[in-house]
Length: 554
Image (cartoon, rainbow, N blue to C red; front, side, top):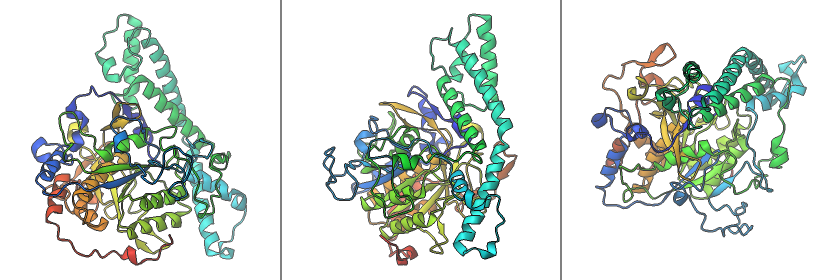
């Protein structure tokens, strides 16, 4: 659930030649730059005045994989000092062999990896289909657990039927994709660069009439699809093909059960949570675009105009590959959280989510285990424009099992800036006046991408979350005496807010507007400089963490 269609189409990889002004807008300061960034550089200036030095802090990135060979990331990877590299032994006796920089819960012992996985909705539907499909079910005769399973199955059945109605739009996208491929083939007969972007095509002066007509038709087609100008031709084709493949699978989901790739590759007993020592140490996996981009934002790789090496937090990134192309498995998420906690992470970034969580209790237990160990979890709100006050996504801070709300989680929505698209809010971010804590930049965010020295833009709340994770790492590195709960308090209490809290901001493409207080509980955008300033004066007291009072199995 990391992307919607528009986010897929807008995701672009681009080399470092893009202007510095647009690369790092999310770092800028509203007062000095008139840009609604997080004021990162001003935060570093404040850090320069501190007498204390940075203390080590580990940030776990639970995601789809990290390119461990990227020049900007490889020296920032957490290294398990208790493990001897590549000796095929479990030197630290933690159950995970050669876990040097983290762990891959989507891998098999033979080195294979799960790349794509079915939606949780589809997995649930077919899991119970033989029990309920076409049968008269008297819920009064069911146990409480069976009734819950039946009601969830009915919900998935209805959603799968809705998915079949997307066929008309799918046909349109397929025709558009074929047309763009044909036009691209014509353009490439004359264009010198096969990786041409929309922007470069706009400025290109064709030699022949056919190329000119094709250029204009191509530009019209990509504009209708809402594709960003920095998108390259190969990326547009790849994203369209992935979208079509996903929609075709969704359309056939009711009749065709997903292949049990987990049984083939991972070979664990999924229903037994004690069967947890599976996977391999390949934290990159087959598709590390999303996770690599997230890791770069957690690290907040400095640009060439801003040297922060002496002020940089003593940050190390632990990679935990858990999120496939599709919906993550609850068991993997729960074990990934526990692995991060047990191996010293004090912050966990979770840029993923889904609409169903059949084994929610496992994840709930792991979140509360993290609370007991003073670990802060930072979670992206999601990209479906849901109101999370009325629509649940998972992981969820409220637990039906514990009947409480986890206090060690920050839920992050995405903001934009008028310099990008004339608006402050995005048309994709989930929101909630009661459930989303803060906003953070999430539109056209520049960071690392797979490849030795590759960078580019992606967007979504997946990008908003690691920006907050870097802020949390700054605070925990320079103020290690602060607890996870206190760090959360500092971040939420230091947001930038408009002078008029009731002012309404346009939501593009949604024909509506909202005030920031309608979008998140704080009514503001995170601000690193404000957070550091608040941390400097923060009065430390014993945190009242009710989660610590809960009994959680280790």
